[in-house]
Length: 129
Image (cartoon, rainbow, N blue to C red; front, side, top):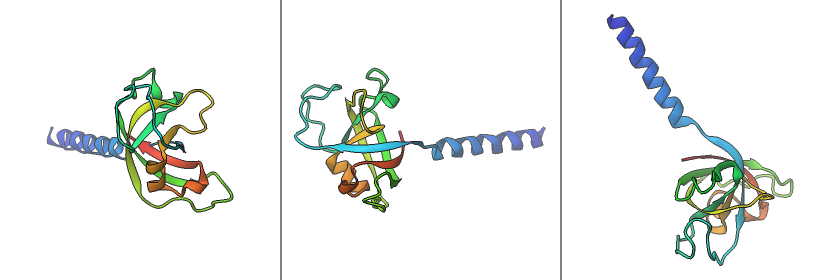
């Protein structure tokens, strides 16, 4: 009986570690100020560490207000082969990036600059809530 409890406890710890380390992967682009009306909150000032979500994560406004940690993982642009800064940024989803959006998540220029060289324009990222 004790052995079963010990095994169950180890499985639960392993599962919690897996969920903590899980990242979604995609691409990030950026948009520039001014940041006018947003799909989520209208004209509310949400600061500059913000992002627009593509259909991949928007969920008909379900992503509004969610905070995502975003980390650059690599280049998509041969002209800027090493764009990543090695830092992560936390952004709040405040807008919708409509069909045709070039990235999974469209960051404000300020947020993109934290994780990558803006000259890259688009980078591969890991992101999670």
